[in-house]
Image (cartoon, rainbow, N blue to C red):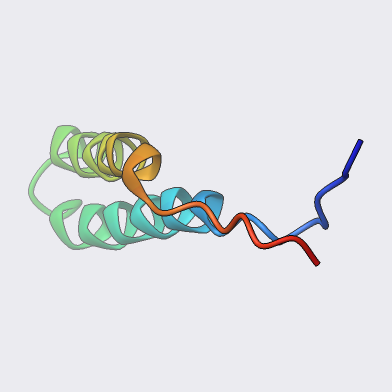
Length: 62
């Protein structure tokens, strides 16, 4: 059984990145409403979770 190295799969980085983008946009929108902040954060998480399965998987045998 092959084990993956800790950061070999970059798909989780994409989910975290879109979450951080949503957080940044949420902080900008926080001055208008807390609900805009939560909506931006949830949209960032959702985009990451929807796009992640479509990212190419690196299947190189090293």
